[in-house]
Amino acid sequence: MKLNGVADLPEISPGDDIAALVAERAALEPGDVLTVASTIVSKAEGRTADLADYPVSGRAQEIADRIEAVAGEEKDPRFAQAVLEESTELLIDCPFLLAETRFGHIAPNAGIDRSNVPDHDLLLLPKRPSESAERIRAGLAQQGIEGIAVIVTDTCGRPFRHGQRGVAIGWAGMPASRDWRGERDRDGHELGVTVQSVVDELAAAANLITGEGAGGTPAVVIRDWDFGDHAGSDELFRAVEDDFIRQALREWRFDD
Image 1 (cartoon, rainbow, N blue to C red):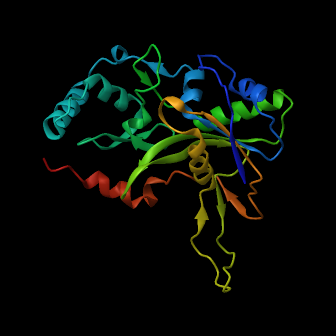
Image 2 (cartoon, rainbow, N blue to C red; image 1 turned 30 degrees about the vertical axis):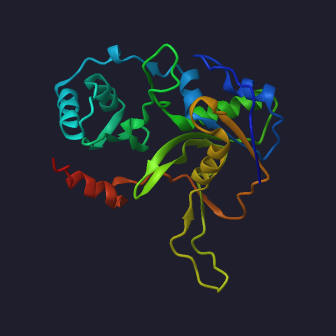
C-alpha cells in the first residue's frame, strides 16, 4: 500500500471544486482511495461561522458557567450554544462537551474547530459528510477519473488512550467496513464478531501524511490497497440500542 499527499492545494474558499483541484495535482488511477480532510470540505461548503451568530440560551450559559467553575477555564457561552445547535444529543456537559452530531458522529464539541479558520471564529463539520464524499467522487468522474473511493476524515481522541487519530466521518465508493464473520482463522475457527472498520483504518493511515497544525496536507491518495473478497457494511456509527457506553453516559454526571 502506498500513500501520497496531494501537494500545493490552495487555501480553500466557499464554492471551490475540491475534485477539480485534486485532479489538477494528482494522477489518480481506478482503485485509488482519496482521503480529504473535513477542514477543506467544510470550507468549500461554507461551513464557517462567527460566535456572534449564536445568541446564548439559558442552557448554553449554564454549561459555560459550570465548566468555568469546575475546570477553571473560561468557556464562551456562545461556543456552547454552537455545540448545542450542531448536536442531537449532549452526552457529557462537564468538564468538557461530548456531543453527537446530526449525522451520527460523536466528538468533543460536536467536531467544531477554532483553528485554521481565516476571517471567522468557527469551522463546523460538513452537514452530511457522506454526501460530500459522493459529490467529490462525482466531480472526479466529471474530470474523467472513474473508480475512485473518497473518505472524508477528521481527527478526534479515543476513550482510554491519550492522543488523537484520524477517523472517517463520510465515505463514498466503498463500504465502511469489511465483515469477517463466518470466515475462518488459521486454526479453522469461525469468526463470530470481527467487523473491520476499514474507512477508519485508512483515515488513520492517511493522517500520518496529512499531519496537524500549520503544515497540513489535507488530501491523500492511497494506492494498492485491496478491500478483498469480504462482505461489506456501511454501518459505522452504533445505534443507541447497541451502544452501552452511550447508555451509561446518559446516567452519568460529573461530580464537582
